[in-house]
Image: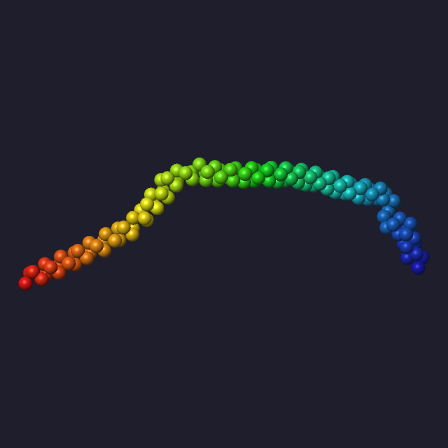
Length: 128
C-alpha cells in the first residue's frame, strides 16, 4: 500500500508532470496560445479591411445609383419636352387628319356603290 500512496503523493505534488517536463509543458501551451492569438489578430485585421472596403463600395454604389436615377429622370423629362412638339406636328396631326377623312371617304364609296349598282341594273336591263 505504501507504493500506491507514494504514487498518489507524487501525482498530487507535481500535477501529474515530472519536474523536468513541467517548464517545457508551460512553454508549449504558451506558444500554442500565442500562435492562436496571432492568427486571430490577422483574421480580425483581414475582416476589418474587408468590411471597410465593402462600406466604401456600398456608399459609392448608392451615390452612383442616385446619380443614374437623376440622369434618367432628367433625360426622360428633356426628351418629352423636346420631342413633344415635333412628334405632334409630324405624327399626331397627320393621323388626326387621316382619321377625319374616313367619314368623307366612306360616304364617297357608298355613293359610288349606288351608282355602280344602278349602272349594272341599267346595262342588264338594256342588254335584253
